[in-house]
Length: 198
Image 1 (cartoon, rainbow, N blue to C red):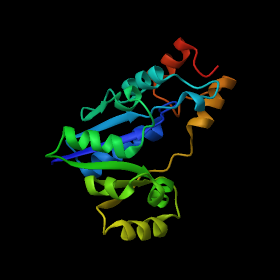
Image 2: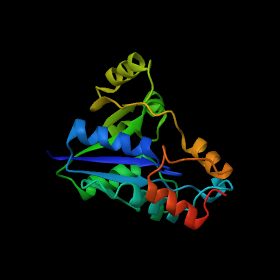
Image 3: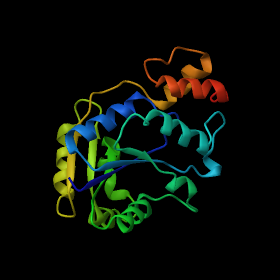
Image 4: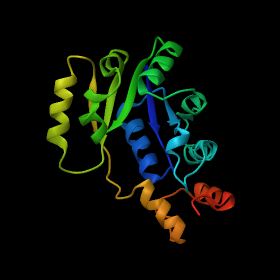
C-alpha cells in the first residue's frame, strides 16, 4: 500500500475507543503508517483539570506503543497559531508527496465538514476516513460522502461502538472510580504518577 493515515484528536485522555478506532483503520485500510497527532489547545481554552500538552503527548505514546505502524507526532503541539486541519494536512502532503493521505474524521465532523476552514483544499490533498461509532447515522453519512465525492475521496468505516467519552473518564478519575475498562494500564499508571485530573 501507499497510504498514510492522519489521526488527530485531543486525547485528553487517550482511551480504548481511540485504540479500537486505530485497529479498525489498520484492518480496513492496511496503510503504510498511521500518524497520531494530539491537537494543540489554545491557552485561553484550557479549563482546569485537563492534562498538559506534554502529558497528552506522553499518554498517546504509551497507548499506541504496541502498534508497529502507528507513530505519535508533536507537529500540532509545536506549531504556533491555530491548528487548522488544513495546515496539518498541507505539512504532511509536502513531507510525503508520493503518498496517498487519508484524514480520520468522526461522524459529526463529516456532517459539518463543509464548515471547515478551506475544506475543499483539504479534500484536494487527502481523502477522508469517516469512522462511525454510533448506530443509526449511516444514511446521513452516506449522503454527505456522496455530496463531497466530487471534491475528493470519502470512505465510511464502521467501528465497534464504545460508550465512553474522555469527559466521562476524567470525571471517573476525579471521583476515584475504576477506569480499567477504558484506559490502557500504562496510561492509568502515568495519570496516577502525575496526579492528572485531580
